[in-house]
Image 1 (spheres, rainbow, N blue to C red):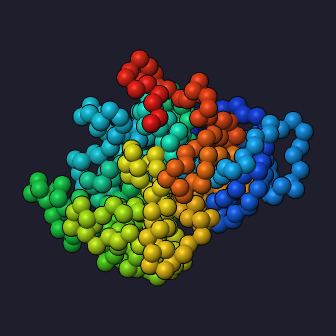
Image 2: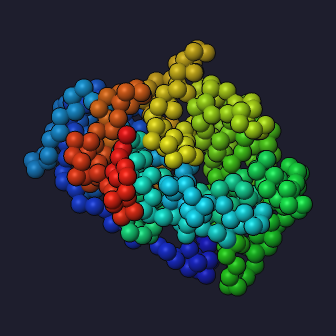
Length: 432
């Protein structure tokens, strides 16, 4: 329960979620291999859902109530909906043109007052591609990484909607994007202003947190949009998502959290996380990472494909993320690549555990794991039926349900979402 004063809580109510689940039918998926998202596997299993919720998950003996639509999944696989913890869909939409570039408020090193949802364009064709090709049912939209404090994140249900409020994941906590390392010092140092070094990055951050603590412990009735966000972090209501590459810098950021009294929910990009798996486990901080995307700048030079496997081996939290409008369509393949890299070095991670990198672990880092991320009775019926093993490069989502509503069916082109922007455009509804 929040301990935020009423005035600050009131500041968080604008632009509230108006999401309403699409209608669905009671459904029984039978005969498929089930990965439940929490590390479990059931061969020839049954998943039941109705009224938007998971009703039951079990073996072939699980009774199917009357009135359920039965779907034969023999030879196929079922997983929870895939969750991308790091996306810029909507605020860097397709087509990628300057007029659509709304992801970085690169006018000050700290902009905790901006909210990513105010840049999200619901008509971005990338949303439907992410569902059709990647089985994405929920995603977190973050501001870009030009700033030390880039602003609030937005967690969305991947559903067609006229407004961003209609996509907002009900009950999801806000996050705040932070960035360390090269980006802030390059952007602002290049303008001859602070920060231009890593020590400058920390100096600006620390002073900003000092000011935020003074606000949080004082009179919050005088509203300040930036400090409301920072106070929400200090209250524990807003989760920190910190873009950071180098292990030594992540360790310093963990100490900065201790200094000012907040926790880093996840480091994003985290190519050197494998060097500090013990510190990350102790802090309860997830590493949101790519399978093999590294070396594109100096701070990403020391990345290795075995990163995820080494973190898993250290019992630290692993999340596979995209940060890319194409990568979000193939997170399953990215996870498979990371698994294969581990296997080559002798770390054999079960398939069911690898699926959790895309589902429950992401949900935990986003603060929505009590609602989605695994196939458990009472959770949202966010479900993907794959036409083959989801860790195979040849497999694709066949059907996708969000809150029990079938929103994609590869065998029914009429069910494929097409935004207003796409109508009449070349490639309308194309999911190749």
